[in-house]
Length: 394
Image (cartoon, rainbow, N blue to C red; front, side, top):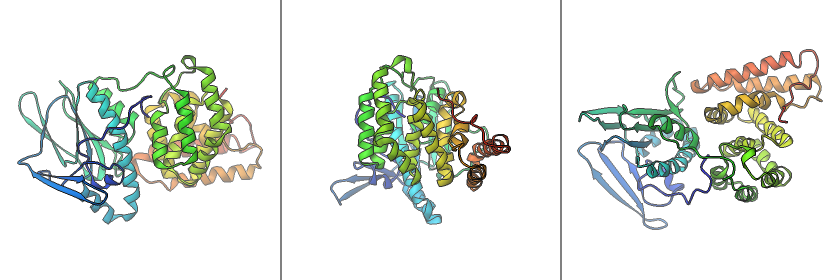
């Protein structure tokens, strides 16, 4: 999520992959696979492009107080897709999300006097204070990542969840504002978060929900996500405007559209649902039904459910713990008036769906979800239906 009231998204002078021409139409730099070559692709018209190639003696050297947003090169993108054609759409979506939020983080960094680079290097060269050069590598399988070099600290490479080769204890980042901002904030000692509450413009949020409801496109989804708060304190906001917005989301078109899009397996709709929960925490009925939408997505697309849940969890641990969110999503939305055998069947189907996900970086969350479902199957439904496991949002 991003700060409220951000201006129109600025485009960097170079981006790391030509495929993003589909998303960002302007001058783009596609870094060649050879770290000594830069190929600048300039869009000069609807169908015309101009290429300018510059050869360097070595990769540019990164000095202290710099953040490098790294991404896969066009050549490596094509190689990955040739090996597994089914990854194309997923890679395009991930890179689109990465650049969308990286540009906003970059604006915050520049405002704080921190240098920013967007590159597709396989090697990153850092100039240490003693004049020595330290080299680090970027694995194309990771698709994107961060190279962090604050003053007085050692260079740090932060991997994405990428190809699922994440090792326990390793630093990693997701293609969202909160995740990138958190990693950079922690290592640079700056605050890239925003102050929730009174600054929230509920009128804008309601308007963007309306736009999304009329046309739930990726573009409109990302615009909505860009203005939804990542934190919320009801004590510091305009209560009447908040209530009006909640009523509109729940009783007008937005909730039904979100439910429908999540049932279609739409990743961005699932993400919007999570962040709508933040502003709906004191609205019991809407909170319960948003949990139902998220819970139903487990069987629809367990991989996307786990990816988005892990991304949300990475920056909202306290929110999740206080609300028993995972339990409420997985089980709390199942209608207790159903026959016991129907309830058990639904829980087992969710367990089986989760077991199909094998990615290493998701196994811990997957197993925790399965454990939650298995325990609830025994505890709540083994000897009859209980109402005690319904969400408690009051």
